[in-house]
Image (spheres, one colour):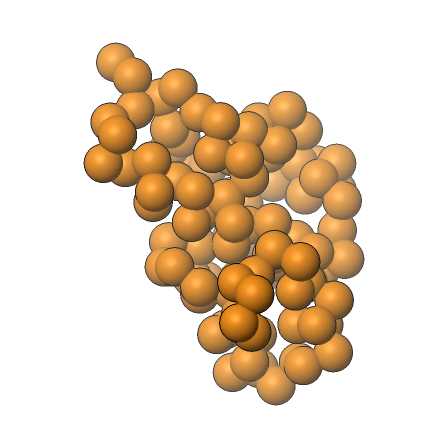
Length: 104
């Protein structure tokens, strides 16, 4: 069963947040894949929302654990910059800005 069109935006937001957190942590896709015990190709597909069938909650939790963030922050639009701001880590936020909305 192919991923429903209504969920595509959610998967794009999740992928954008994962990429933002990965860059904030200064991790490569390879490092994230190794820590999350998932293939590099799958990490790449998730970040690009290039998925046919989505991915499991278990996968999302493995990625969140590898990034050391609560799983819930992966699912909300613009969660990454808001979470980083809450932590007061402006320098690292600036480093990850290329994946964030231009108004940040």
